[in-house]
Figure 1: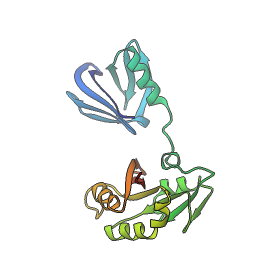
Figure 2: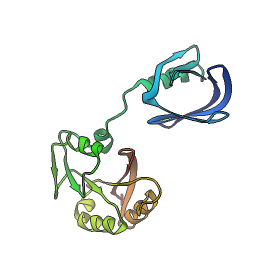
Figure 3: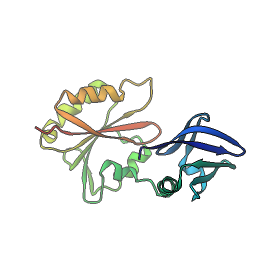
Figure 4: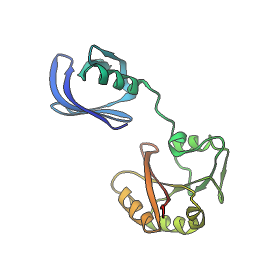
Length: 200
């Protein structure tokens, strides 16, 4: 969504100059007041006379955004977020080739929306990888499908302390001739990067 604005934030009885960012699944405040506010904990969200008003954990919050922006932000915050299946491109007409363990509840739920889950063929490939060696093995195993234009998502643990991170996934995959087009949060534990065949 990527919306941001410099504004005045009224938090209960105090006023602060902040940069406010809509970064699903949170509203982030930086500057004079630092807060991360999950959308699910925002109550009574409303645009009112140029202010975006809501309550959070029983506290009253208002952002001075101006009428047009307050309306757009209220609409964005109240809109149900897209499901993981939708973000990954999984639908009832799609067969998904799944490589690696399905060890995340959100991933399992998303796969349940597919027409079928296969170990060999698919309109889309999902690969759960933990190491650079696994990543390279998957790239070799799927090379024919990738050359034919089938998109692939690499799903890996997020955060420090894991053998794979976003940069290593990207660098390794780019060397095989595919290019990253999207990133998605799978859950609190996992991130995913999508790659497709590079246009010649």
